[in-house]
Amino acid sequence: MDPPLLSENGLDPIIHVPARLRIVVTLAALDDGETLSFPRLQHLIGLTGGNLITHLRKLEDAGYITTKKTGNGAAGRTSVTLTHLGHAALERYTAVLRQLLDSANLR
Amino acid sequence: MNEEGDMNSSAELEQETTMDPRAAEFVLAQTRERARRELEINYPLLFIAWGLTLLLGYGAVWLAVRGQHPYRGLTNTGGVIWLVLFLVALFSVTVRLGVIGRAVTGVGHAGRQWAIFLTALPIGSGALFIEAAALSHAGASRQVVGVLLAAAPMVSMGLVFCASSAVRLDYSFLALGIWLLAVAAGGTWASPVTILAVYALAGGGGFLLAAAIQPWIRRS
Image (tube, rainbow over all chains, first blue to last red; front, top):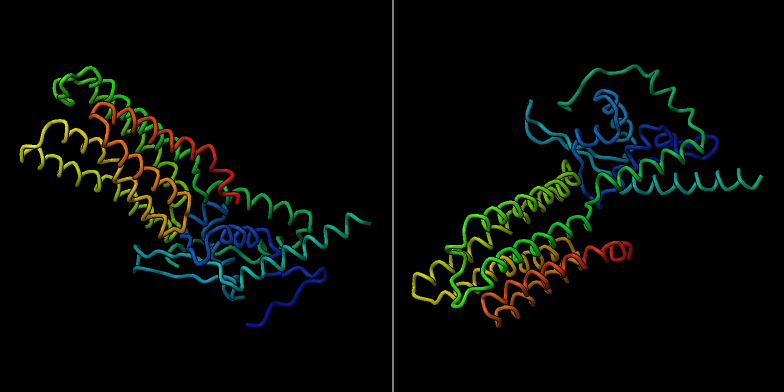
C-alpha cells in the first residue's frame, strides 16, 4: 500500500485529524495485535457511531487499522486493531510533530 | 458494521483538518493519558485488594481458632466469622472485577485471559477443599485437614499466578506465584493455628509489598 501524500508541513493527513489521531493513539496503547471492540473504542473516543465508522474507514483504506466482524446480525461484534503500518505511521507522525514544535520553539 | 448510525456529512470531517501542531500535541498527550488510565490495569490497587483479602481472611480465621487446644477448626465458632469471611470475599471479588473489568472490557485477548485467570482461582481452591473433605472422611485428623484447608487457597493462587505469568510473560506474577507457593509449603510445617497467621502476614504482606514496588517494576 502506498504511503499517503504528506501535507505541506510533513504531517500525515490521514492521522492529522483530531478524531483519527485519538483513534490511532488509543489503539497504539494496546499490546501488539490486541483488538478493541467498537463500543469500547466509541466510548473512549467520544464520537457518534456513524462518525466513528467514517474515520475508521479512512484509516482502514490507508492500511493503518484492520476491522474484524464476528457473529451475524444484531449479535455481531466489530473489533479494531492497529496494524504494523499504523504503528509506523504514528511513530513517523509523532517524530515530525516533535520536529515542527522544536523548530517553532527555536525561532 | 452492525453498529452503524447516522452518517454525518463530510463537512464535520473537513473542519477537523485545520488542527495546528500545538493542538495536535495536546490531543496526542491527552489521548495517551486517557488510554493509559482506561486500558491499563491498576496493579497496585489489585495487589492491595488481594493482600487485604489474605490478611483479613486468614487473620479473621486465626482470631477465631487461636485459643483452641486441641484444634477443632471453625466448627462451633459462631456466625460472626462466616459473616466476616463473606464480607472479605465480597470486597475482594468486587475490587478485582472492578479494577480488571474496567481495563479489559472490549479488549480481545486480555479480557479472555483474565476471565480464565479469575475462574481458575476459586476452582483450584474448591478442588483442594474437596480433597480435604475426602481426607476427613478417610479418617485424617482435624489437624491434618485444618492444614490442608488453610493451604488450599495459597497453593491454588500460587499455581495460577505461575501459569498466568507464562501466558502473559509477566515476571512480577511469576515472583508472586513462587512466593505464595513457598509460603504455602513452609507454613504447612506449623500448627493448623499458626499456619493461618503465617499465611495472613506472609501471604498478605507479599501482595502489599508487590503493590508498593509495582510502579518501579512496570516502569522497567
